Image (cartoon, rainbow, N blue to C red; front, side, top):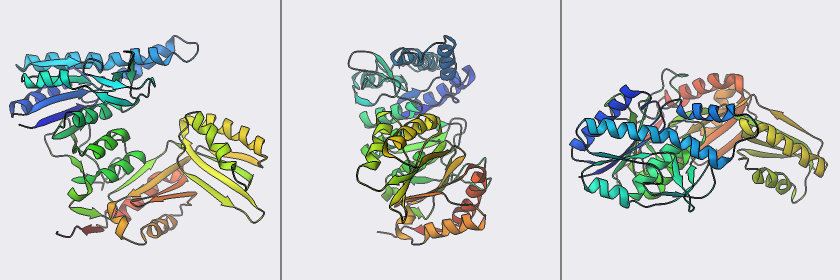
Length: 413
């Protein structure tokens, strides 16, 4: 008997018919002899509706603790409905909020981090032959306050529970068939990947791919729990996210990703001396602003330009801080640009292939696309370009690296 954790997103449980469909899939899995834990999100649109309700009150930004209390009701509705639907199909089921199932977090409301999971209550239901239906996205802190994990937190909840229970697999059910080589809405030739490594999936998630939340991949990689990304509406195999040694084919480029939700800030004419970077990035960090790419260019006169990117939602705050710091350190000025995009190629095979970055740059140059910033790691190359060229860049790179079939078969041991 294997233990399977299944996670269904908001689209998969968006109405009563879809909840019944999920219930059927869960019961079929249990009837096949598996123990099943089901983690669900709020119904599609529910979280946004709750946020809108809070906004209708007007006034200052609402207290974060009360926001968590409000948002957690979305998943509470789903778990109760799904447990009812499973029971009507003749299988015992029990619903659990984050607190009831033992999900302990820190006190950082609206973006809490998981600290511990007490699996006693879940084990009792599973050992009794029932299905445990748990609320994703939420937990409780040491004082019993409801907390939420931030957007995409249900993925993190599901994988964390799978790790705590030492599950055989965590199945992430979505409205897509798996992980694709790029966005099929942009590139019709995009195809589903059978397997990707944790490392590749982590890069893809951080670079704009929306299939999995970053923290969920980190949990799975740390504890070695396989993730199976598959469709809620089809019985087909999806994409397996596994250890590198379980990937039979080391693709030079497994995927092309893009992210339009970034902005660029440039501080000009900064004195090239120790401590300047710290004076800029410390207040950004203190403000909770996540900085992505950082580039520093030294000129012949001893001054430097410092450029960095941030989420576009944080552009205004980052610009205010940059202007303040620029004045304090005597910089020549500050510029910013919200009309940028980050386009990336990711693949395990880059570790063993020279010239991948150079080829990427040539492909973009042939399309007349100027590169503003570059960032690399062992298995990815990212560039910042003008936003208007995003689709052209993605199509060209996918054609050059993926559709060309460049790959390296893994040698037999």
